[in-house]
Image (tube, rainbow, N blue to C red; front, side, top):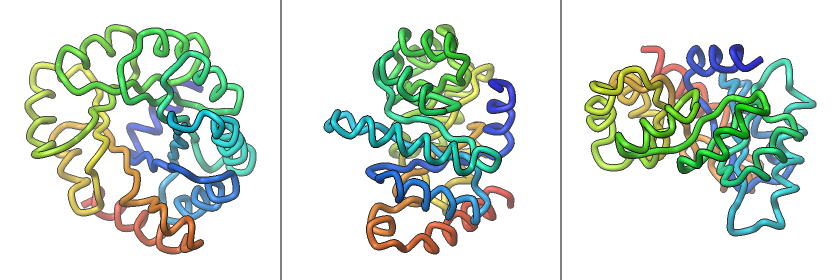
Length: 216
């Protein structure tokens, strides 16, 4: 299963990030993304609201149960071993973090899941990869991020980077051309207002635009 997930991330290249959604919204968003051609989705834990962790786990489970043959779902903002275990129990296939936490990386690998920790500097990226990361999430992508990725991928071309933060449909291809193997996209694709207003067709439209732009 791990190798399948790794292959799909490299092939599909876009992980859509769902934040602040309840179970029904997350499932509806996942269906809208699928209609737009995106088959990788990350549902994030909100660290400011631990009381919502169970809701997030339920959203992951709902997507996995309803769309397991269509979507690969992962958990985001996983900052502890306990959250990694909760995500695994809910059916997450990959674990994404904003930072490099070696304990989370080890636990993710022991659970048989794909590990995607966050890093920004060359030292952090190398540390994450050496700890067992399957991909390293370059986060946050700010400023002239594609140029930074290109520079980073020179000496560290053995590390598969995912670019996250500041990615939109217009610049998505720039990150891939710079050397990233994939991108993570949040509010510019799964907009919270669209979720709250039930405008899932807009998510589908934007997903199609992302897919078209990275295919050029």
